[in-house]
Length: 318
Image (cartoon, rainbow, N blue to C red; front, side, top):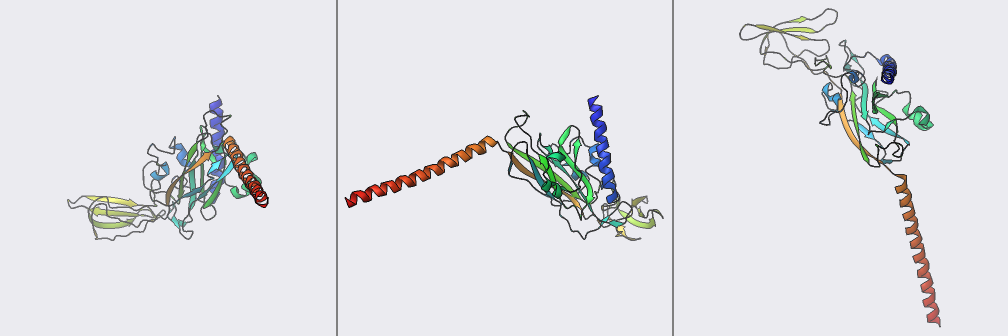
């Protein structure tokens, strides 16, 4: 019963996130990763270490994340995620028209780390976070956070408030160095979750031969139908959706897999790994005590030296 209740609330949160995201622009299943990918992958990180974002977003782009070198238990700290790209770039939308790029990311935290509750976030950090809605990847994986799609021009840099665990309360956590994995994308993907191509990628000839005709695929939606006659007389027709620019003409002889269109993709996916140390406060206290003893020892040595010099001076005068 508890599991059903959790699933219900999680579905409600997901719907709320999509409701917030939809006003930012038209959302297709490729464009809206990572939220929609939650339905297709139980875990966003594969055994090889690659994040599943790369299955739909084929181009490689940079991604940056900045976290403190060390954090104390049961404290809120911020992770700064940067998704850089050329703000003047326009992407091909699902309807074939040009539009602004959206961004999104998946952030895999160590076990025990999670999104900080609203009542634990300092006011200064709340201003940095803004109105961005982060949510857990699933009810069972609260240490994995997702966000997007968001307008890239406004949200190319995001601040994530994270709550560190307390080993005194969570016995599965220790004072160690932990990895954090970021997978960030900008723009729409090239492949849908079912394996089919989107209109945001290059289309190649399915066979070698001569182009006998190029027709409009749909008066309403646009696109092309490219008919190729093979050497044995058979014909094949390649359907190209609206968006990519056609590079071939009627009568042109093609080789197999020769590009029929340009590659309209201006976005891509980036992955970045960083580490954070969950620091034991007792170690810091011990270090401070050690520094105090070192300082005290230095002071005593100086005082002893001064006393010795005074004794020597007194003996010389005597």
